[in-house]
Image 1 (cartoon, rainbow, N blue to C red):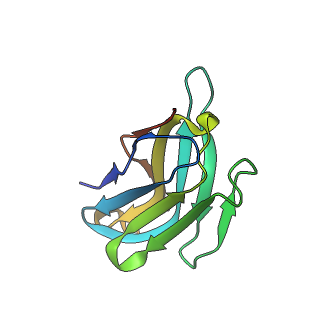
Image 2: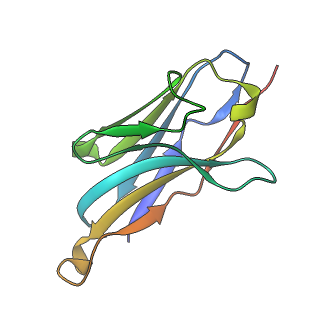
Length: 124
């Protein structure tokens, strides 16, 4: 069974930093795009950053220059380094991976999997 497990959330003061990690586990044939989304109370879930298997990245305008997404393909893990955090970054952060489990190889395209979410709170 494929799972995405996130870690690294918490409470931080404005201007501080946090690093989120998300590891995909299980019998995985391949992983394409990976990304981080967030959802603040009363708002829709939004894309924060994404990275392709080749390392190309894109970011929401609100986090450009402050957040950095990276991945370790050997570990099936994606990271989000968050610097200069602001109160408006407060949200539940979700990891997403477009992946193909081994048992689905040859049966169809990769599909999206979600982590359980990790809370990030930026407050003094």
